[in-house]
Image (spheres, each protein chain N blue to C red):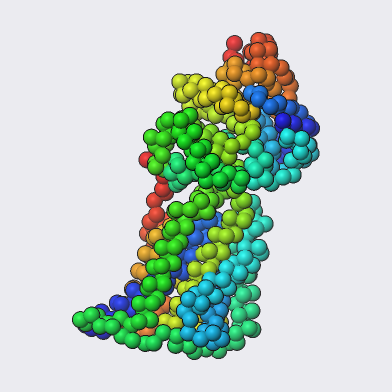
Length: 236
Length: 291
Ligand SMILES: Nc1ncnc2c1ncn2[C@@H]1O[C@H](COP(=O)(O)OP(=O)(O)O)[C@@H](O)[C@H]1O
Ligand SMILES: [Mg+2]
């Protein structure tokens, strides 16, 4: 469904990604794990065309999307939930959800209302807080809102950038359960994580990113049992 | 005493016009994210658009308002294309310097097209005075105040109650996140710039019928008043900018009541300097941030 080939990105003189290749198939949960500064966020930002690529080719649903602007990507069904959530702080929870639907101009009003209700079902806590400012939510609630907002464009694939960042373990668990649920509803998931054990335990396949290169790939189980991965990312 | 009260009424009326300019200014700075120095020229083009519409089509206020709004909207597109569109990722002073240049350009174009002299604005509203006890208010003043209130209400509805408004506010809060939502950020920023410009254009019409003159260089002082009023709200808070505009109108008119009309513009500067000394970030609280 999404294919990244030979992706290289530089920030000025800093090389952030070097010849990265990976592929996400329909219905999979794919995870990209790696330490701080490995290039995970840069990977998503260049898929969304928010940073300039040095070289590389991106295909989505068979079409070349290498140079498409973000608003066109959203319309094609690609949703990007950014690192650090990036909730609109002065929009209410409800308005944040609506903001998520603005890019998909195919959606009509009844469908949008339906999607909002679906999000409230999936995230009951957002319903309770629907008229509250987005910026007043707790970190976990903001992450849920960010994911819900990303689902409001009714995407085919949702890319999540470190959804567990800065959250208490119990909330992280809740969020990972939600990710499984989202996949079960027919979405494809590209999950970026530093929390490797959690990510690999729910992923179909994973890639390990180190200083801008893919150094390992395999199924979630294989990587969990790989001794290098265990040493570097699983803390034992 | 009567004179003072009536000067106060004049101040409120003028304040409403400044408020509309400042509201336009805040919408621009809020949505686009850059400070602009072209506001005065946008106001002038709006004023002249209505001047020619009244000249050609007679007394039709609604047509004048629409014409001013549309003319300034077009100037807004011009300013956006030159000063902002390619500079969102550049250091902020680039766009700022660019607006100074475009402001000079527009000022000179205005003088070439409209001539350097003051032109008398046609009297499109019959001058009738209504008295309430010792308070007197003219029909022109009532029309001005109502126009500002109606436009502000429309703006409020667009911003707070429509999907368009949500995308404008989303772009004003976080352009990267808005892009990730699939909002066309550049187009939305341009619309925000044009809406703010359009409001400024109508304010130009109102100031012209209030003073009954219009001239190509009247923009400079007005843009400083809009800026000073907007500073009260940290340049981006629309309601505080409106309040700032009304305050400046009142302060200015009370000031000249006790001194001399030639000092009119000084009071705005004093107001601006006092705010910049004591509360340079304005009075708007960052909304929606966890306490
Ligand atoms: N805007 C930027 N300007 C310069 N360097 C950057 C920028 N963003 C990221 N980098 C650098 O690129 C590398 C990859 O960063 P990033 O993609 O954010 O990693 P991760 O998300 O895996 O932590 C790091 O070395 C980081 O310092
Ligand atoms: Mg990151």
